[in-house]
Length: 407
Image (cartoon, rainbow, N blue to C red; front, side):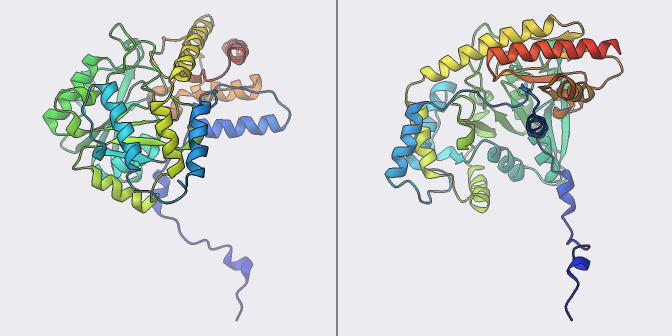
């Protein structure tokens, strides 16, 4: 007997219940809504997406093309091509003051796999992970997906979006397995000081915890909180390299978001577990893209310096423009390319404000709650756009905030 196809379509096979725990990224959701408005003829100012508006440097592109012609079109070792791992190890050793072996490097298709693999390899159902709040939403998403519990560490506006070490200390329990750090920080632009990192190190060592240190914005620093512009890694503190996974990559510093090239520096006992996860998920990272990574690390760095200088100029434009709006207060971000202003719009949530700014003013930004519960009453703006677009966006935000505060 032939079954009725329409009857079959009414009975979709079940999904795994754990899919309900897997979140998404608000930036891509807002981008999709903004694109839909543009398709209707609206002019939208994009301040939502965290992507450099610069092109990948020509010498990097040329290295990828050469690699294609040279036959780097086949599978490579799961952990990465040896010369690429060596180049990454040398760079991290130089920039963090460490002695990194290439054997502790894993090359991944973007930085996200390092987040995913580290959480899977260190956490079981019922374990707890300390996460800054607000923070990059993928941390909490993956923690919940594996059945572990995210524990929020509030980032304080009056501390430059740094956490109180005592708040971190009092949240450690016998179930804690992992602390996640992100400095410079998405979404706030905050930068942890050396004393902050030392406090975390003391806690991690005392309680025998892993640390995932997301350092993807390590090249984009304006103020390190110690009177300079240096990047400080918790892995550089004695006793921490053997318990810290450093996440970094090429997307932000080298304007290579679409290339999908990242890496982790992983303690030797943990590395085989991440490699095994990678072979199950990705097999390996594209070989010709890896070869372009060598050119990025070892080639001219002027493009990075020019880009960061431009981001700094935009940062100053954004902070001044936001602070000139009644009901808005913005701290200077110490790194990355985000501003996270606090807003006072009575009777409106941050999501309602962000939605109104998109629908009525045509400026795409994110609600602070896209990054956690402590993001309420905040908005996130990316200043990875031209100064002209930023100025237009600020004018629209001013008009929208003034309109909302009147009603």
